[in-house]
Image (cartoon, rainbow, N blue to C red; front, side):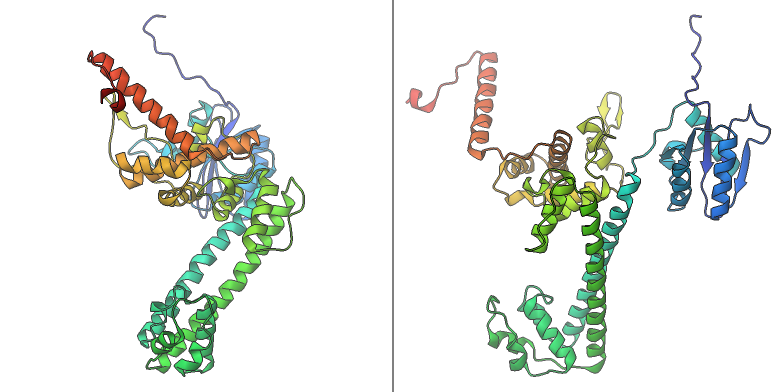
Length: 434
């Protein structure tokens, strides 16, 4: 009938909505088919199993839930193991109508949106990849804590007027560690401490000895000793995490066994190549840490992302879509906590001095836009390269910088010639004009 608004079509008739909480989970099913369409359950394991049994008895196939803190993880895993099609949705997509906010209404609203196909599930890595992701995130947190322990050591040394950080680039390097451990052990003679100087150290022994003349107060020495003990404890835990990560990489490896000798970075690079099938570190500015983040957060299978645009959008590296009146709205982009996207931004920020095609492209971006936008654009370029390598199984081939500059020069000349023809002018080379 003309002028009549079409009604929404039910896409998922056998679905349920869950409002996740710390102490209670509110579950809603189709109210037209059941007398008690909303029930609440506790958060103990037996309660999660009761949710599974009730949903199965109701004939539910799809389940939608909000990603509330970390409270959704146990319920998600229980439902996923029970072969439900679980959709983890962003809370911003399920905002309730103003003035109608309660747990019962929330779960019913989630179910209603899901039934009409208005919710999209967020990306979550496969269950077999979750252990390595947890180990990698734990290692990342431990590395941050270790950096704080180093800062505490540096603070204690500064309070004693021991200017070791002014003559050494890293007080936890080979020379710095030997000196700090000797100070904690009781050594106070600057000349004796300077004897631990490594041959590659830029500062001479006399300068190091002069920087080690301090007041050696007991309270600061106590703080230094505790910070050093905390650093060693965190380093042991980091080593344990790295051993777990190596085991997971070997378990997911698709190629031959990696070498067991060589530097840690070389062995890790070979393990990552065995898991991913390609060497992502061949891409300029992409290091081992960035490749490890990708392997832990996403893995080698990018089939959940149909196109590179979907992948870049999930990373938070796609252009903004806030448009009104056919004009793109300004303002900062939406905040997203994506570890891989942040790792690619960090990799792109080092492209300024890179002598490759990616470095040249980044420098051209810096010439016409601010630094933050240039870094995001370069990170977007890295993401597309990674997507192509993982989906096609092809290794990265570096473009010749001179050839790329020649192509860029030819494009500029063609553009100038086109503008000259528009104004009925002639573009003449300098040699011909002379």
